[in-house]
Length: 463
Image (cartoon, rainbow, N blue to C red):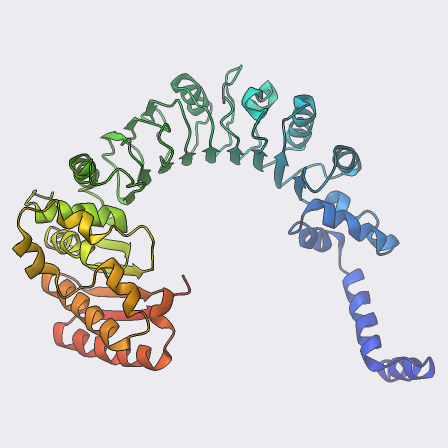
């Protein structure tokens, strides 16, 4: 009865049903408790959340106690940011993103950092993006003294990360430092102040020569990107870590102790100097593999696979691996086949192989690799069924050719991995565009799977 009267009321006032539904919807949103509305607002930038105050009196102060802050200096002027912080009433901040410039007034940056720390922030991301003046900026001492921080990300333009006090981040579990100038002494100070640190990410941090994690027993995950030629660390001592992701460029890191490692994700990038330093890259790749011989789960990128192919065709011995799950990310190109074949043969306990296919501009040109191999017959007999990187682009859209080298790859894997139980192939890029072809491939892998007692799964990926 009430709903009927409501609809009749709308008709009497000349309003249609859709307007009534919108009105009732608005009433429904307005009737939500503040904590639910604040949770919703926490997913958008703070300047947009502030604009909801004009909707009605109900919304005037809702944003002031949202559990999260997202302050982007390029979206808000200084005065607006200061006004925002003045109006903000929440006693505790769950997460905060600060994106700032340190070009002319470091004091304002310090004030904003001190503000969020005073509200017991648990998850903090600080980005200083000015390319000229940030090199002279240094964080205030209070930044290094927080008992509430659990997750911290610092992104700067190669400014010094030099604590002027003894670091005390007693609750910190996840730390990510990107593009920082970080000395050995500084990282030692930081690590000593993080007694329960579980995850550490160092992305192109310069100056760092030695990373000693032996006094961090709770640290389990280490992620290092060394794509910048001058980035570190050079020596890594990490006896307690279980998971390692490592990206090399020209200058390698020496893994002194990774004795507890169970999972590794490895690759080499930036091959601009290849083939003039082919021996150097080959040694680097095999050392990375040798240090990972005890891991149970191993992920390898396409560039590393190509360098391992070079080592295989040169007759260089590979270490025996204890890997049970192998993940490779590459194209079905000729230059990766010898390396994968040898990896499979040297992994006597392999149970699962996952292949992520993708089109990449980083695949090495065949001519650069063939010229480094003394026995060309070995190359032809092993790999001629697979296309070169140039040929594979010409084959895109040619279903017969794609089917042929996909089937050849599966047969190669089954032939070389005697203990394999399951293989998952993610087809990315143009491989999955033709639905009919994909259905035919499913039937093909089902036949191979049945004949070899290996579970083969074919999936489509949007990547």
